[in-house]
Image (cartoon, rainbow, N blue to C red; front, side, top):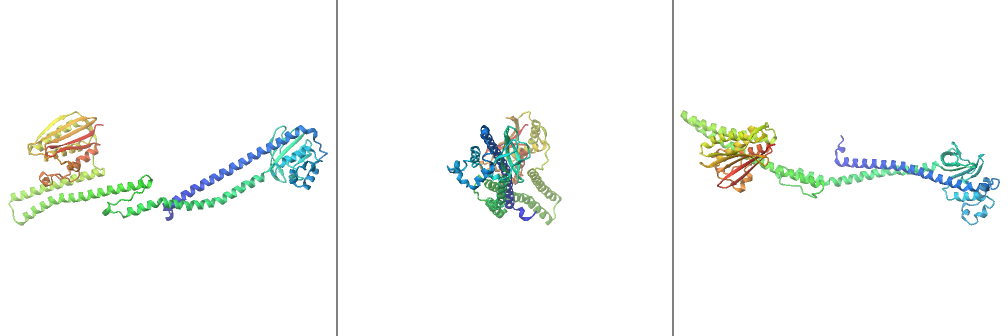
Length: 491
């Protein structure tokens, strides 16, 4: 495709011009057709009225018509000698005193008709009794038979030129009124010529106007494009100025600004995530490196080597857990996390979780209490739901002092399955409640390594809840404990 056709301005201008041209051609064609049709209908109506008037005027006066007096040649001769304007003077009756009053009245009537209207009257034998002066010595010739006592529209000829005629006859005379079709053609040809002159003018105006409108309409888009091109990963805090929030350009600007804001937040999260992940992985690697370097400096007893290997294994397991959790979150973000949905008996799942919780809490002598379990069946991934609930229980046990209590609850509420974990732990400050589901976020950073947490458990729990179209909420009181509530749709 040519480069110039890739421009939206050019394409808009071409489309606008094409639309105007098609509209103009359609309008011109319809105007030409309907104008010709209207002119023809009006002409037919006028001819019918004229021939009807002439017939109605002559029929009552048939006995007064005397062709011998006031013959057509004599009448024409007198009319040619006297100017037409004289016919409007009072002396007109004197001028034609030798002419029968009937022909005089017909002639007077023809003065009010268009100049090229032809009138012809003949008797039963075909003798011309009267014809309008513009016929001179020519006679209108009809190819069709004139109908008796009815008016018909026929095509006649005068010197080979077609004439539109209205004709009728009675037992005495034939009446014909005609008008040259060439006059209609000339009028339509003039209209067609004017239309041809207008087409290039309209096209030129459309091109110029289309370009001007396209430039004006796309100027804000060009400005947005220029400003957006200057925004990079280093200055995502910038936005595009909003001109008018109600039009399409304003909506586009709002959308782009929202996208830039989300990108800014995403880049900030990625930077924080990278820093936190590096820190979490660097710590066990540093521990392993230090212990191995110490082991290599001087010979050790087998028991000392065993302790070093056990410590290194713990750090390796810690890194493996972090990597597995990061991989789980990455797959969840990309929508590729393996989940197999089936019917899950929540009561049975929580009872199994209760047995695991007792084992986890045994070391700190924490009492785990299963308050209630309702027979609820939901559709979900059993493995992931177990992972979700276990993360919450593990988090509660970690932050509950020795001798504390952790309570589990599973029930049905307002058409949802509800799982709840409550503890008597250290609690969460109110201003940090919204941050606890962020990756690598930990409330007590000083004790995080001691507790073995990586700050990813709650993030994974939230993503699993979202995969099941559920929610997870937290309520906490500093120094008195926290309650995590998971709500999952039953259907």
